[in-house]
Length: 123
Image (cartoon, rainbow, N blue to C red; front, top):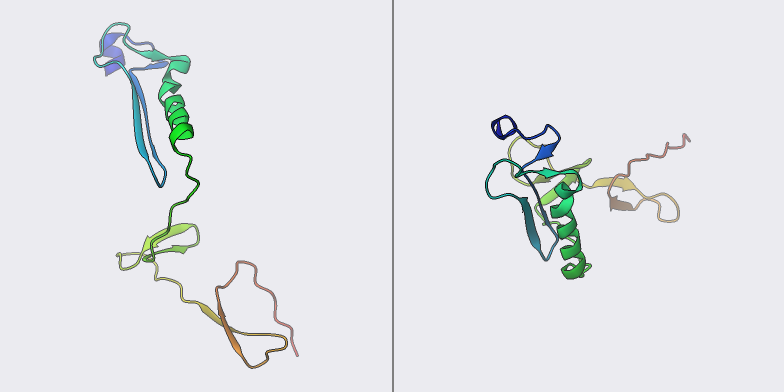
């Protein structure tokens, strides 16, 4: 609607923005024109100004190398994250109990099942 109303070319935009965050900072950067009108549009590389500003600011201020801490009520199933107690989600996987092989025969070890399962030897 804006393009046709103001005669903007098909390959332009009237604004550009990005929002991002780190464990320490949250930042939104908007670039564009406060009002639509003839010639008030961004073309080519000018649409990347907000991303470049975000990158430079995070490089200057986001020097802390700490990472996000996963809350204890959030768990992973495959590549998806879920919150304990939410509706319509798979139950939290229980640890797999497997018999230890080797010197500690008869003892059990609690561990998480790995994606690559080894075939059991037949005796």
